[in-house]
Length: 318
Image 1: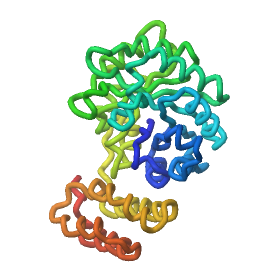
Image 2 (image 1 turned 120 degrees about the vertical axis):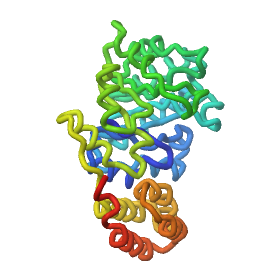
Image 3 (image 1 turned 90 degrees about the vertical axis):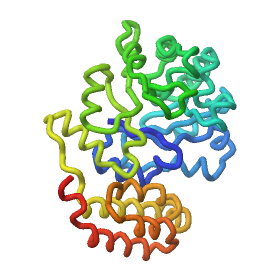
């Protein structure tokens, strides 16, 4: 089970709670190659990794081959287990500049960039990409063969095109075409729309991928990794985490966020997670409002304790 690299989400505090709850391999947020070679503070901070996270990959992105080569060397110096290349980010400010999914419009450049990165580092190099720029440019089997030929060790495919962004359904049949192609020998991981243990097992069996990468479904619900692994092993569904467990993990997440980002930024960046930690609780809105408006760490921890007591029975029947 892999945790996806998600911008403004997959930071060390989030990765910590995902690792505790069953994530096997994790990746950093994607890091700008230009930011790394210019020693930009925000980019350099994203290189922070901790021993308990291992194995972990550092993911880089950019549109210039030389910058990506240098950034790969900087990433390797941070001592991850993997250097990963982002060829999948669909957001305009990245893709429309030729980075992320934008490079899917120039497959030869993608191949050359990957080759230079593989030559630069001694660590395994992996890639995360999408099916294509749009439906008319899907060449994912050819892309996989080209990247395999220049030495990548694994490929993760998000089953959407750039044009789709995160809309519609991910097309895993295209991922299966890559996995089952006789010329493909590297591990192929699937990504997109996996939000339950049942779906994870169904898709793994149906499309025969080597592993599954979880992204948005893990936000505020890191338990999904252990739930999937348990279901795959036993066919049994684990009970949903009760309120005490949800509060405990939210507290750990907040504590690490404060330690890693500092008080102001740590509080701000936790706000995106609260709704998901406590999704589905009737009459929770007043507490959610307080959680996202408070700027005081002690007040936030007190609120979490109050939530634990007030809603202790909320998930007993889940």
